Picture 1 (cartoon, rainbow, N blue to C red):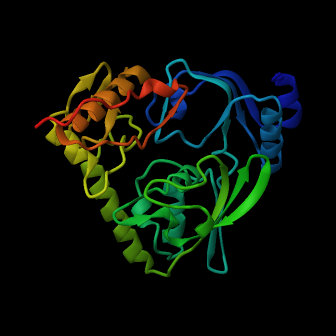
Picture 2 (spheres, rainbow, N blue to C red):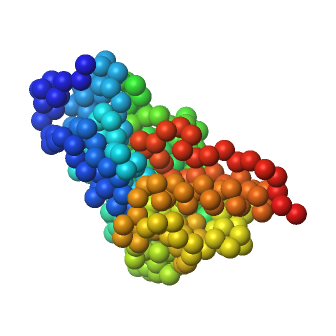
Amino acid sequence: MLSLEHIRQICSGGISISEPLAPMTSFRIGGPVDIYIEPPSVQELVAIVRYLRETESPYVVLGNGSNLLISDDGLRGVALNIERHFSDVTLERGVVSAGAGIRLSKLVDFCVRNGLAGTEMLAGIPGTLGGAVIMNAGAYGGQISDHLIDVTLLRAEELRTLKKEECGFRYRNSDVRQDIILSARFRLPKGDEEDLRMRRKELLLKRNAAQPVNLPNAGSIFKNPEGRYAAQLIEECGLKGRRFGGALISERHANFVVNTGDALATDVIEAINVIRHTVFEKTGVELEPEIQLLGFPEDVISPLHGVRQS
């Protein structure tokens, strides 16, 4: 049985009860978690995970809460937030080493300042390195695994370092989704600092012009199906600008659902289901969610049915 007293004995970091999670997500949606912990070190994180597994207690690992939708009822068990204490970045002998909690914007800035190319496409992508590695995040023809050397992670209760080739990276996915990413190392090509600054600025302006950065959102809701763009399919089906309670399919980018101020998680789920069913019925294309869902029943995303309309 989970004991808060025991957790306090093995963890010297911040611990709170019934902590609201909505402020910790880019969507600004979601209920509280039973116990919220900020482990201050790898050693204490390992000890906490070991204890949670021994007591068969559910837990999730959070960064800065992007690409994530949490249930209105919140989460049972424990949320481990690694952003605060796992965000160091260093450069030694041409190798960039970064903690999983570092924000992508900070990682890009560090690389640009040091005249290292290959991360500029991450500029403007919300999230931390750990989440980006798990989903192999990227944009504009690049992805985070392009220049990756290896990843250090916690698999079950074992610390491991996996080479890039052992991680199973593919489009917006990997074989390390069930692990806790701790850090990653990169070898990046040299570049001119001023050219890199200009490239980063261009991509930021392009992203800000195309995406609804003025309203809370979790990034792209769906993966792009092979050879197609999810946003284009959604727009062609006449769904752009449709509202579901406080959730709105963005009029700027149809693959974004935004929180207009009072959206519930159930509003977003309704939008996801309507989009998937409409696109499937009208085009025959099955959209796969890119966003991670926490605290929901397994059948919250309703199965597709019917046949494509002629």
